[in-house]
Image (cartoon, rainbow, N blue to C red):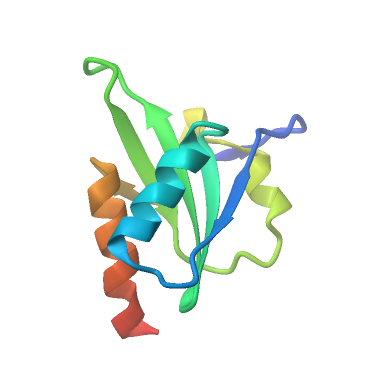
Length: 107
């Protein structure tokens, strides 16, 4: 499980009015230049995406929180080095964007 740390991490906040694949990719790319965790706001819901380095040739794993984002500050204090239970894992950013787009049908 992720643990709570008293020292906050940077959290970028980005919103997309259109929610297109291109828009979400651009938002994530620019937000990950600033921080390794991003609150993405779309017309159909909010998501928190974490980008974690892995040991495989500097590739990154992505984790997504798809739930209540009412207390945004709690995501700044999560230390994922202890675990990622409760987060959806993805191998690449494209898979994260596809999940967000597909979730429109479920909401």
